[in-house]
Amino acid sequence: MNSRTGTEWVSRRWSVVLAVLMLAPAVAFGEEEAETEAGTPIVEEEIVVSANRYEAPRSEVGSAVTVIDAEEIEQRNQVAVLDLLRTVPGVEVTQTGGPGKVATVRVRGGTGGQAAVLVDGIRINSVTVGSYDFSNLLAANIERIEVLRGPQATFGSEAMTGVISITTRRGEPGWRLNATAEAGSNEHQRFDFGFLGGAGVWDYSVSGTDVSTDAVSHRYIEGQPLEDDPFDNQTYSARMGAAFLEDGRVDLRVRSARGDTALDGFGPEDLNAMAAKDDETLALTIEKALGSFWRQTVRVGRTEGLLRGTDPDTLWNNYQVDSQIRQIDLQSDVMLGADNVLNLGYSTETRKGVSAGNFDEEADLDSWFVQDQWSITDNTHVTAAVRGDEHSAFGSETSHRVTLSSSWAEGRGRVHGSYGTAFRAPTFNELYYPGSGDPNLLPETTEGFDIGVEQRFGESGVSADLTWFDMEFDQLIQFYFPTFSFRNVANASSSGAEFTLRYRPNVDYSLELSHTYNETEDQSTGDPLARRPKNRTTLVAQLRPTERFSAAVMAAVVSDRINSNGAVMDDYAKFDLHLSYTRSLWQPFVRIENALDEEYFEVPGYVTPGRTFVAGLRLLRR
Image 1 (spheres, rainbow, N blue to C red):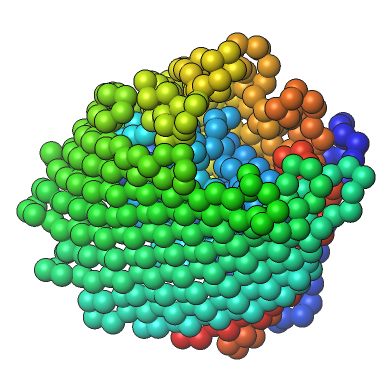
Image 2: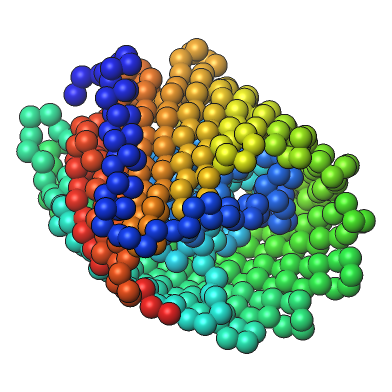
């Protein structure tokens, strides 16, 4: 595919989006008479949990944050979490092939290992490679995703460029049954069953999903035919909660996923190489007020990721890697006054990594943090935090963070910003891999800030946010060829701007258009960092013109990238569409992914699926 530039290339693709946005309401109104009431009130102000590790209205949060809630997840109807993240400002997703292949999520130009990933508050980053492979994480039974951008000191290791926090869905009073069956191109099939409810002090949600695809090759090799590489995933999720002693709450959350996928070798197609990935997360959380001014939270959790490769035809595709984290968190929220909350935290982690035939190691990480959240006036809110970490391998590290949010004109205008430092502990591969690991490595560190202005335009439902960010990375760990080992030898920078335009006149319509400009530099060479696009534009439009019809359009236009060898990568545009029609208890739907059948690579040499049609039926019953 030839690289395309210029306004003609962009405008042709955005014209498709505009046409869909104009056509969908017309089709819906023509088929359904029961229209929703005009001017339906907008939902209350969004609450953000992860930014300050304490619930706060979005207007009081200084950090740059995007929230994807349960309603949006359901309306977009995308199978994997990584597809939901593709439209978040400042986030880039790269996948080495189709469904089930390794997927890396980068925030603001960092590496996959420089963003902390949490499921129900439990860290799931791999201790062997640092990053988390999103290929196995489905969107089933997820209530919300919060993406924090910028250094997040209070979350400790890996939170250099941001935090991706994923929360399992909580049960609701009464009961609700969801069952979905869908099939489509590339022999795609999905079967999903979910049940949630609540009675008295109890609530619960359970979910089981089975997804499979075929007819998508893993790699593209010039001059050779493509081979079908299947993928299967079974995911089970459950959350059980109960209230106690009036304001106390206990939550037990379990998530388990098994993914099997076929791989290809470095030369000709490998017909027998397979990879199996098992992910398990367990979290127990207890919250209780211990007086009128003190609330205590205790969280105990465990996560394990087991990766196995098998290939009877070669030696190098056979491996087994096990990553485990056991975690205990204590957090006290102390009300120092009506406008001041002090957060005190302590956590301990035991990280264990096993690479069969290479190493079997453990490391301990003990941490504390102090954070003060203070509302100076009704419109001005600040936070200041410091955290200390003691790692059994490299020693101690101290991080800090400050944020500001200040509004005017009854909240129509707002300035927000943050400044902080963060670090990443060396991975077990970097510390202990035979022949190349170095147990004396220091942690990677970063220092960064962002500042933004948000403006709401009257009661029109239109708002805009422009945020500038700048980060410096030091002591980056790279493979150093002169000594054939890992060393703290690299420095880099990442700066740019995130612009978001939102339109939400009522609960039935929303449109979010964002553009991220990101300029990165490897300071030893002066070159941009590989696979970080300089320009990325995304769109999410959700429409419900009638009670029965709904539509969602997701789009991404990516340009100005280079590969790891310095070669210029092609620009591309990807559009996805979901349409559904609810009738009584049934909801038939259609989903079209890569609607323009764009040929592109997120990682050169690894195939991305062409146009994919999916049709399905969902049962909704209360």
